[in-house]
Length: 473
Image (cartoon, rainbow, N blue to C red):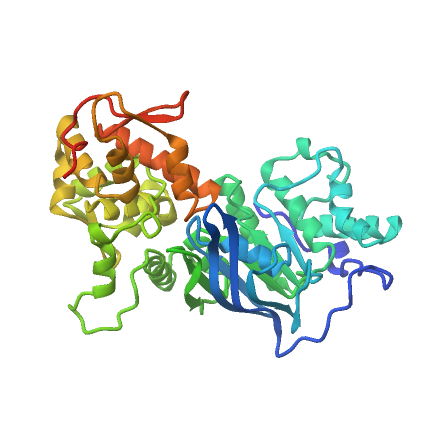
């Protein structure tokens, strides 16, 4: 059941920030462009110089539109959002708000976070008032504005409640009210529904879209960061798909020309989801004669051309990728991923790491919307435990990080290498969080394959016993 967004008290606009507020007056809109980036690049300091996260981003956000930044983990979408909000300075390039380059926090934006970010010792009303208080709005005015925003977002009656008394969905409503009460030109949302259960997320998405369509939404534009393809197609007017190899770039921009409210079950919706999925999986648009292979992609996929920098490991466990391989084998070795996701009650995005892992190991290939097991993949899916380990070892040892760890341990049983050695090497190409994920996956794969062991207490890799995959040519 939908909560009533639009009540009589909510129709009046939220109180404006007074003239003495430190927020500077917004310059006039140039051709409706609220935000713009030109040649935006962002890099972080690493062990071997700067680690690029974003490169050459050209993006515009216009009044009256919802723009979704869609990409996998590590594509830089949250970093791009923070650059647009002025919370992170670009390493090069320009970010403009209403035509004026940013030199600090963007006065025309407000953020809604994934993790609610509420202060637990403050009531709902006090949390919502925080932005107005920072702008110097008098107590009576900000209380009135906060109550209007709380009513607008469907939380009337909870003004005096504390965050601990609220469900996850209600806490996120407080986050929305806190952002909307300052009437930002652009509302920015960083995966705002990912911490909620499926039904709560669906309900809150629907209510926000009703509010946006009603004309009562106190903001001119919305920028949404998400990894969920269906969420992007459901909400956005434009989807900006970011790629992450070797750093964040705009892979393609997709216009969503579907009427609202959008029907998930219509053919046009499914076609758009499939199109965006193909873009996200990295398959380039067809620009060459049909049937002719892409030499660039084939060359990059050759095992002897893979490097630590160009071949990140997807966050996929052996059990996860094995389970997907077996499901495909049970369906004749070929399946439509969207159909399989529907059968399992999953989003396609949830399966992408396992898909990437099978592709990287040479166990599967993507053809259009279908995932096909290769000959090796079919053998792996049908093998018993011992044979599957041997097949997996032969494939995993061709992955640069797994091969590096294995080769570093060549010698007699008992040889060890500290994990810090590999961390230092990976730090030349990845952030510290990415380094953690890379080593976790490599350790899982290598241990299952019998290529090496790992002592978590000592934080070191070791060669225990001879295994066919350990002695490499």
